[in-house]
Length: 226
Image (cartoon, rainbow, N blue to C red; front, top):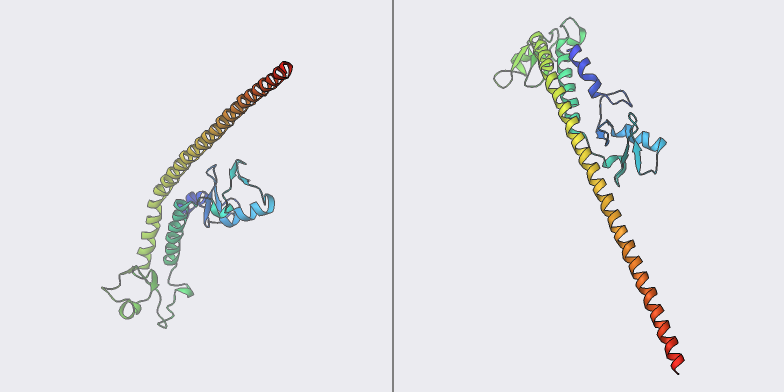
């Protein structure tokens, strides 16, 4: 399990706080950071600006009206963090041997927690199996078996996590490219409208000048006649 967590770790830690992602937000460059970390980073260096440079690659992201909070949440990454944390928590709780003081059952004096209740997700003692965790409503297994089971579960999950991260990165890349293309099209359209307006204004000004000149000439001709 330790090896599996070590392999997954770099994908699940925010580079700013070096801790597991909490409410991860995605920048246009596809790098993710904790919302709180980004807020502190933005406030301390770029407060009031409409863009924020990525702490890793420096690529700028245009901020929405609600600032950092309005950035897209990386729900896929958040789900992976929660799943891995849960598996690690369970595996950690069942790997401890009954010789440890904390493995003594607090409900039944002198009893050690030799079993793991899969229904309640907690270690239990022999007395618990016949009092509070009776079958068939509860299903329990040997604590060592539970440890092996959840270690293997975490190991089996690693390829899916890696694949999920690659899929997410690809999806974000496509999204980023689409957004960039849309922005380019908007800029191009605005420029075309401005050019057309400038041309129309120039034509109107030319016609105005011509008409004024004709009126003045007509006035002068009429004065000479009289």
